[in-house]
Length: 230
Image 1 (tube, rainbow, N blue to C red):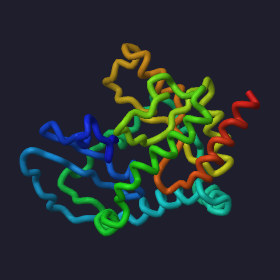
Image 2: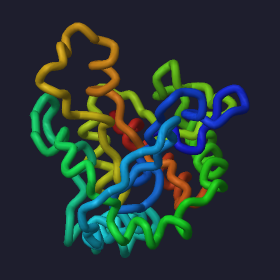
Image 3: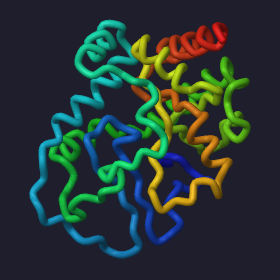
């Protein structure tokens, strides 16, 4: 999830033998991953699907954060819950790798060249910095500094009742959620209390490149109003 970021002046993932970047978490694509590998990777040999449903869903979520009208329409079609499902609920689909030889959706391959833009890194950094200036007091300690080369995938807000905050943001058309709320049943969760704390108490707020600074200001204002009511 560190796509477009760099470490020591080199692209993250360019040093080892294998790096896999999730594309749809950085851009509004139905699926697909970017892979850097020191040896040739096998070619997909099954048929591709179109993926139009996933593309419409992701595009709708992005538009809902920028327009009150789009947010209202999305709320009628797919209400935002702002917090996801209960922690620890294991869903087999979450860890199902599917067919490893199936290529990305046709919608992904046709949109890829138009969607991926290296200027996205600067926009996401700018949005994160703007939120940090307003809400730094509710950001977990490791993330109160925007380090050189970092390209944030979300803005972390740590509060005692993140589900309440998520619901309040959803009411204003702002999508948010937990990062990795579902843990694998083989994971000894209690052995990692710090990681568990971050997973249960930190709400991920959008900073993606499709937002404007006005959108970011609206997100910051909505969070601050919720904090003021606590």
